[in-house]
Length: 427
Figure 1 (cartoon, rainbow, N blue to C red):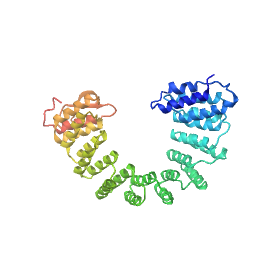
Figure 2: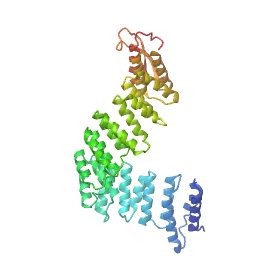
Figure 3: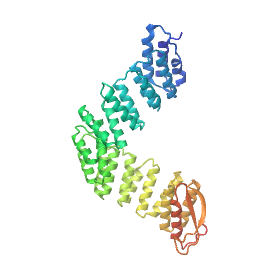
Figure 4: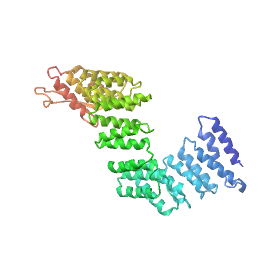
């Protein structure tokens, strides 16, 4: 008869020696040891082994692993063990087996606070917000335990996503009664739940504010068009030990643009540089967008050139900036460079470039863009259409149909119309 404890130790030693663990080689033999007839003195050893395996949870087949572990728990006689069940619950939910987790939960004869909290949190994580609220209600009525701050934060987020004003108010009342209103996770979720003015009251009452809390408030005011308040909050944040993250900085730049406050955007840019940290590429994108929208194309180009690894957003942001400021020749050059480097524009991007070609009366560039659109499968049908709506006297124009949208067709028609003095028969 296979010694379960020795098998476990052997498995664990191999795990520590092996960086790339092959689950079927090491863990499978342990899980296949399903002999319930071990001597009684070995039951505690078996329980410890199960606890260790559940905590390790190393597998390339998570659902299979969870079911095998569950089977081990049952055949070992530990199906009523709350501690083992609480280890199994998150295992199931981490592998997206929320249905199995619920079945296990329903069969448990005893449930503690960890059990209830685990299910509530997992429901909200998987977007089952209604189930999370029902589970939380049952938790409050049927359990002597008390939810922790993470569970309450999950419940508030569920109310926010559902738009449940009444439920959210009830949860807030429960939070205050249980003394969790000063917990940063709960407070941040409540700030996100309420309208901006109500959220500001909760925000002001928090003794400790995290970066997420500041982010919600600054972005909230920016979205509401209260850009000046958003900037004031940023100045307050600078007096604390909390460093603004990329979301705060992006919200502030949006606020500065809304106010046409170029100096404010430059101050934020200078603040980031003074910190001496590498600027997140998403912040660089927002800065490029901010500068070009404010007419500071050269500043945007300088920032664009600092990006070491340029992605599609980098290229499209700079190209859009050129087009917004009528730098059409530069926009077309950027498009050519993107195509040469292998980046694929969507239909909207192609239509924008065609508009720039039309402004330049650059029919040859327009042909290149048209050919590119066909080459990357943006076009699935070419047909000849009367385009008198675009230019009087222009009888025929090649029009393009794009999958899911017809943006490119109108842009190409506009290009031909704009170059009506040029022979378009070869387009």
